[in-house]
Amino acid sequence: MAVRRRSSRDIRSESRLDVLHALLSLGESNRNELARTTGLSPATVATVVSELIAEGLVEEAGLALGGTGRPTTTLRINRARGRIAGIDVAETYVSTHLFDAALAQVSSADVALDEHLTSPEYVVEGIIRSLKAATDEVGIELDSLLGVGVALPGLVQGKAGVTAVLAPHHSWSNIELLELLRERIAVPLVVENPLKAIATAELWLGRVRGASSMVTVNLGTGVGAGIVLEGRVLRGATNSAGEWGHSLLVYEGRGCRCGRRGCVEAYVGAPGIQETLREVDPHHPLVVTDSQRDFIAALAAAMREQTPDVAVRETLDRTARYLGSALADLVAIINPELVLLTGWTAWALGDHLLPGTAAQLTAEAPEGAAADLTLGVSTVRGNSVAIGMATLAFERFLGDVGLVTTRASIAL
Image 1 (cartoon, rainbow, N blue to C red):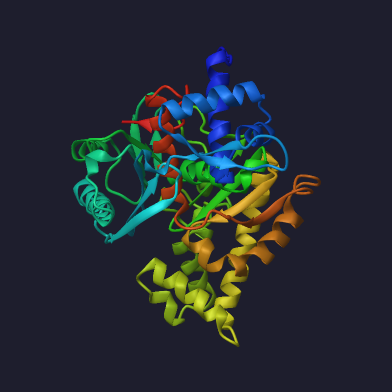
Image 2 (tube, rainbow, N blue to C red):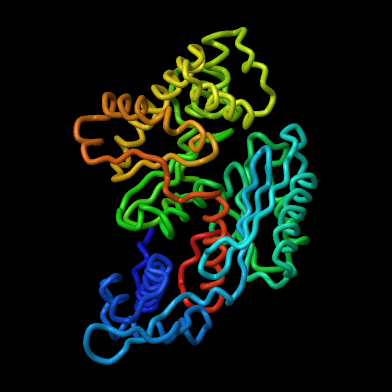
């Protein structure tokens, strides 16, 4: 297969993204500071800024007095350019977050899903109710949005368009749900799986802006890895890269919902953690907790007690060792600068898992693979999946108006 060469149009596209990233980070800036921050020439920055102003994405904020010389014009993202929605669809909830053009959140709405009800119609109805509640909160209509990004659990396959959505937990494995979404949402729409979304959020708003390689590990009902190499989200031939949760951790181990045995997810996903507690203490009261979120929250609460529950502590110690071992393999292959934990399990249990995970990872990673590795919890706060999906919808908008040449997301 021939390798596509970067054209002058691609280079201009990347320059526009660099300037937008810098403005998002700095809040307000001027052309000279943007040139220093991005490494672009002053002439290139001037051209890019003119293009972004013409499109209404950037505005002049006023004059700033320097130490000497004439005042300089400060610039900022035009927040009023429009609203963008990022939607996180999980097994137990739909969470919609509405952002302005500077990717600042302006509203949100959550709708609970019964994890035992999995039909496309049921899931789409939850998505629409959540989206409508978020737009109603700020008094706007759905058709006024610049775009909507929807993260769907499982694999979202395809490049030019969606060819399949494979969700092990759900009763659908085709594009029926996507057709229903397209019927209900009449604005530019992109879909992606949560792994690509969280990696995109890190690229735009997180610590990875200063690193060329990073893995964001999402911990929830399922687990997976959003991988960034050379500053780009790794997607693979069919957009399926990152399904690390279904790599092998234990030969002929626990059954996984994907149908295999011994997957990473079967040990560090929320149901897997509950299974570990069952192995530690079959009669522990939390073993029968029906809600996954309630179970994880109860573990965190138990660890905050002055004398932590012995079975809970052992469960988290084992989970940290499982996670460290699984990450050691990933680090051996990717050799990233950063590994960041995210997702609702990570928010609740990250502080308890990090020390044991780091120790196990260091002990098992091949010599040198983890020498310069930083392991931590993501700095992108809030719902990183929804943030990432809004960013992907924003990228599609930039493409639709001719400002970028690449589409990282799958458009519908």
